Length: 85
Image (cartoon, rainbow, N blue to C red; front, side):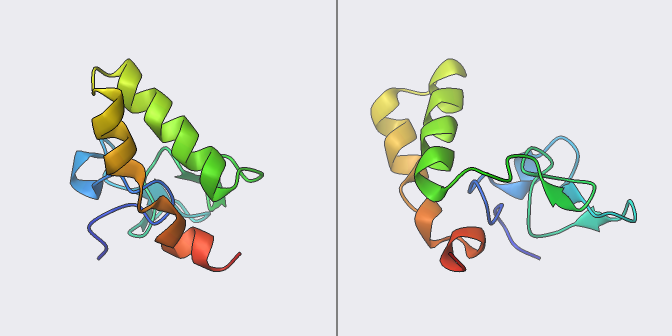
């Protein structure tokens, strides 16, 4: 099992739903429940830069300093979802 979502980089242990959901309703161990729902990406048209910007915004909204949010998201382009593109 991956330790982090392969789309946004969130630690999967912090996912309140324990991971995304496949089309058959089973848990997906590669993506979090924010990124992957019912066997499809929640933001199908976003790119790695857009995902990083969205994650920075969400982290800052959650009280994380912007510099720390930028550091936490710098690896997003190297995650599995984005390497295929």
